[in-house]
Image (cartoon, rainbow, N blue to C red; front, side, top):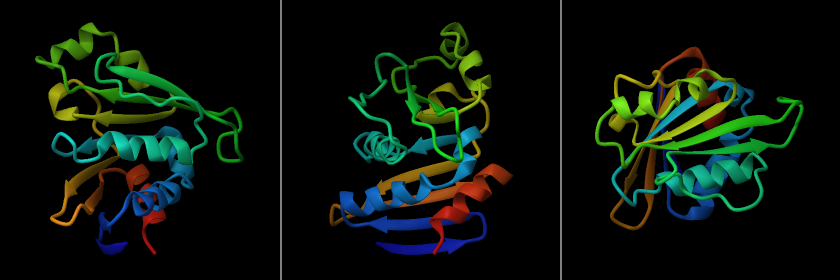
Length: 168
């Protein structure tokens, strides 16, 4: 795993799914996830859903983890640990099929975004202007050799705390 970082950003090159899993494991150690919103960007097939699955597994979510591309949102609960003794509520959103950002409002998602817990949002640009700003953005880009570049950018103090867990 190759890394590069600057203030407010961190780029990690993962040459395998095992490297991406190690990155997800590291991010899962942050207590800041309890109240974070992470927007995931990348082309179709870049690895957004795969990274979400790795992160959910790292957080202890068991069972089948499916893509919410048809359901819009899939709820999960990570088991209790010292950083979240009641468990961690997680909402995994996928707005790929949205044609109009107003669909976000019509779907009644405002309450989910206002609730405590971790929000993971794929295709946030499809609901631009309607969903809250993220604490951190993750841009995933495939590389020539099947590797993936994971570029994290903190956009809030919560995002900065998340970014710290990714730095050596």
